Length: 486
Image 1: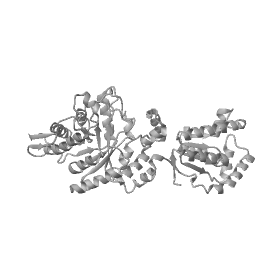
Image 2: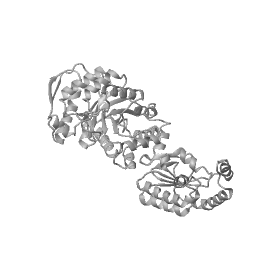
Image 3: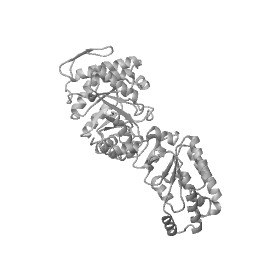
């Protein structure tokens, strides 16, 4: 087995008293994840050494282990592990539930085991320890047959939903790959909106983000929050951020083409580019949130019509930003001799199309500079479609960028990650919510993003779960720095 311990999994520790099991476990796992027979004796009796309550303690242990495994929670069994029947039952239960299981053995030299035992405030009697060591020696050769055997060393705990992240993080050290990160601000939960959004953007700048994006919605969307939550207008917000920040690229991910006339949109984004010193980008999408548009008095066309409007917008914007007057007659939008002054500062103002449908990808590869995929999973088909689209359009793949939108849970360590999962999971199971948001500390995220970079992804827009305060942005500095030198 590899050098990492999957989370979630069943972890069974095996070794005599003094072999280092509890110390090893305490360095790697949260206290809530460790089911210890000693602690259960203390809870059921007068203390950890109250052997009279051992039957009760082990009955509790079996019930707790089963309960945790059935809820797909990482469970570390901290006993001597010498009871082969109990160990077999625990392994069978994990197999039945579909969780990986790891048996960790502690081949600590006998002299060290005895020295540690003597140093304890209350040592195990020598004859009892001798019996444990003898029993361990008897069963140890048979345990080599386990496919899931791990000899205790410097193993790390790695989320099962991000298997390979440890290797990816190591690969990113040398040679590193380049990847840009953009912070997607999806919620504005502050009493002082100006102070809140300012501090968050400045924290993103300090943490090494390449840019900040906002959603282009009139009300909060149900995937993120309640409709009565604050949702400031996208381009007014971006204009304010242009004055507050100095290096961040700014744009909407993505602008719904049914909300604004494309010529007016061209004027707005050109102005943003000038006011920000050439730091704007243009995210575009066909739109999907019918309820908000109907509530605001907009027509909400069919999917075919919305994609057609996107095609017209992709044609009109570069004409508006180019030299001379813009004239274009499309199926849904037209301009006749329109001018756009001031011009954008950028020679080519990047257009990024959001979506993964075949027609959307064809439009992006023909007209835009990039495509943003709404998920970091299931990339094979859209990436293959991008390749075909660029070939059909006669474009070089180096001139087109594919980015992804990611909604991760990140914390400074496993403890903070677990707290964030518990805080935001609502009624969803802990393991399910953690998996769907790829919960993990910076090293795990670095490994995940290295895999994306290896597949040709050039940028990641992250909308972290629980993003509210500048402190929740600072943890990203380790991630952005890892990809800055590629």
